[in-house]
Image (tube, rainbow, N blue to C red; front, top):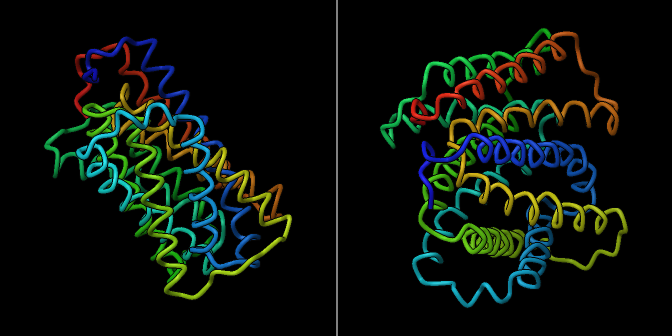
Length: 298
């Protein structure tokens, strides 16, 4: 695989744009999941979503599976545990908080990633990256602030989601430099499907549901928000850093708030518009250093 500092400018830009597309898709999922959870439990929905995604990936990449080795399975399973933690905390937390606030708290991974990168990986972000992180973090705060901020149990769960996803982003950035990104993705998604199935069994939520709204959500989430999104993310992180990935992912609550406005009728405040603008500016500030690839250290 290629080290970040050796990646051509054009390739990095393509990778970052691909990640932005992923974030747009994910931004539509908060409002959809809130409706679905009135039909089935979060873990049962995750089981359906990720199991369907596994079947799709096997159909598409069945020939590639011949190259799957034990090391890839081990790494993919390890990464998949944190991916499951991210989704599990998020979907349960959504039962106790708003879609827009969940988007904000999930977006806090933009701050957590560079901190973990510096502490664990000993990689200090550049000045422009740090500025981008600060702008995105302030923007996240403005996007969610409505005069008071009550931190409830649902918010706490979604915050744990942000931590899990931050670790996930770091691990993906590390392991896609060593192993086939597609095979890693398949193992990750399979891990989430298995863990979700175990959680569903423990809570006794397995049942046959033929509701068209549920299955429409399952198909959409499995094909676009899981199969497409995670394959693209794992591939794109071969060519961009975990910290910049996190900054791009901070756009998720912006898309989440916009979609929640049209789909659920949740109101976006004036501060929310300013917050969204700051997040966009922060993302572009972080991209400015692409003209100086040798300075990329995080």
